[in-house]
Length: 314
Image 1 (spheres, rainbow, N blue to C red):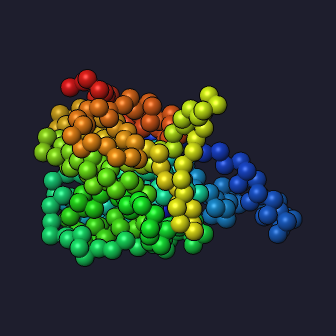
Image 2: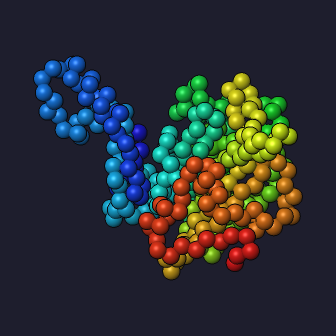
Image 3: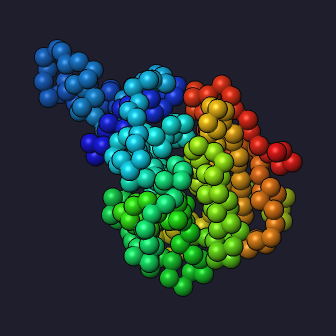
C-alpha cells in the first residue's frame, strides 16, 4: 500500500489530471465540526488524511522520476511502466511488472499496462509453475473465481500475457491473478490473439521500449428493431462479464525519442489466425470513445513526436 501511495502521489505519473475533491472534503469538514465545535484549524493536508480520496489536483508532468535499472522491483519499475500516464484512475493495482485498473462490476480489468523490452522477456520463469488464482485484494463480492470459468466454454484469457514476464517467476505468477483475465473465446485466445501478443514481443527487437495497454470492450450492435444495444453474456455465479471485443494500444519508443502508436481491436470470437494483423488496426480515438479511456493526451505530455499507425500505414 505504501508503494502505491508513493506511485499515485508522484507528480510524474499523471499528466494534467484534476480531481474534484469538493464532496469528500465537505464530508470531512462536516465530520470534523461535529466532533469538535471549535473553529477548524487543520490544514488541507491533515484533512486529506481523514478522507478516502487521493489528492492529485492539477498534476503536471514532473522531472522527479527515479531512474529504473534492469531487475529492479518496486516503485521505480511501476513508475517506468506508467511513463505515459494512467488512462483512468479507478481501482489501481500495482503488480511486480504490470499495473491494472480493476472493474468490480464486470469482475475483470478496465485496462492493464505492461512494459516490454528484451530484459523483461528473458529469463527462466516457467508458466507450468503458475496457477490461476483469485485476487484476494479484490472484495469477495466483486472478484471472479476459477469456478466461474468451469464449463463456461471460455478461456481465462490473460490481459498482461504470462510470456511477457519471464524475467521473474513472481512477476509471471502475478499474471495468473483472475483480475488480469477476462472470458475469451478459446480459438481467439490460442490463435489470433496469441499471434498479436507474439507480435508485440517481437517489436522489442526494433524499439527501445514497448508499452502495451490491453483491455475489454463492450460494444453496441444494431438489433432487429433497428435500435442499438450493448449486450454481453455473463458467466458463473459471480456474473463475470464476457467482453464483445478486446483492444491493445501499443506505444513504441525509438531510441531517437520518437514515439509510434498502434491500436488494435479484435472481436471475442473465432478469428482466422492467417488474417493480417493490419486488418485489426483502428484509430486510437475509436478505442478512447468506446472504452471511456484516454491515451493521446497523456502521451503528448511526454513527447512532441507522435506518429499513429493505422490500417494501410507503414
